[in-house]
Image (cartoon, rainbow, N blue to C red; front, side, top):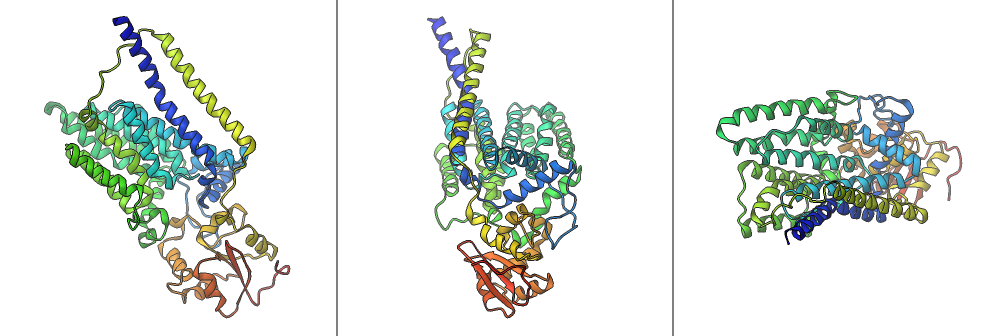
Length: 495
């Protein structure tokens, strides 16, 4: 009977080892099959374009060369490695490349997430938390660098929390994760910021005699992480570049992903907050002061900027994992695997089969489906007309900047708001959104604009219709084109 129990435990152990991989594979296939929804942000265009430039020149950009309003201004790319990966995949497989890369990024995130939670709570609950995290992050799963950095963020915070739960210092072997994160995306500053409160969690529960020693080890680890974050082609300037976006003040309230959370209609994030409050009241969850601070900080970040909701979704469960594991009864740990190496071979074979099945599904799907970028971000016909007229200085809508860059057309403005600065972009929005229409003719004259490319349903085109010296020559459901009446076109406008 004991042999039967041991064999059963071995089977359960092998099955549990495959749970994170199964969740990751399921997540990958889901986002592969809805891959067109990942191509909805025009920033993907300039991210790929910069990656292509880095590959072509074997160098890093230090100044802007895509706009005519900031040409030569200092600018660095804090997501250069992600941009290179996106550019390479796009060159190899077209838009299928960035879709596959994005799907892999979110799949790795969920697999690592389940693996980390499974150390504290039962696998079914870990999978449930993963599904909830995906639901919360769904609005921000796009073919952009933050998704490639997401698995690194989950692993980094998970490993730090695991060290705190053991009342020990994190291993120095984890520092390459910070270096990788710093090369993938500017969000690595969050990983640096969380070292402090997580270290206090470890120190608070350590034995009194070793608290000072443990604290100093965490301090040294923090210094090592700071140094690791500078292991990029830009060195210490990476830190400055990553924080520049936070200095944009009022402008952040106009860029969707940096807007505060909006509760005028019920959202999954609102449901998650209510559920978190209900859990605390119903189960009487008792948390240490550092864990409370971590949850409040992540909640505040998500309330302040909707792009931080994904960090809330994936990191709050990691902070709560140990208290929840102590609250919910869990079966005793699996007995040692009696089968030894053969059992590991079976697990490895199962993992290979899952990966092979995922890749086969990818190949079959790509064989009959062609991924394409959303048309609302690609004013193809309007830009064709502007190229036909040889327009040189185009006053373009913010969301069209990425597409113009992809076609090698100098832009007035694009998604790199930190390059242009708060005042410049705020003046642009106020002029084109009708809040200060008197700014529009001033901007057009100051920057010697000879054509405009604005969103069809925005106030800007209506203002230009009434502006002396400008005439509308093209309009469709996506964009409207105006030119100066005395501008010389290279060809007659298209009908």
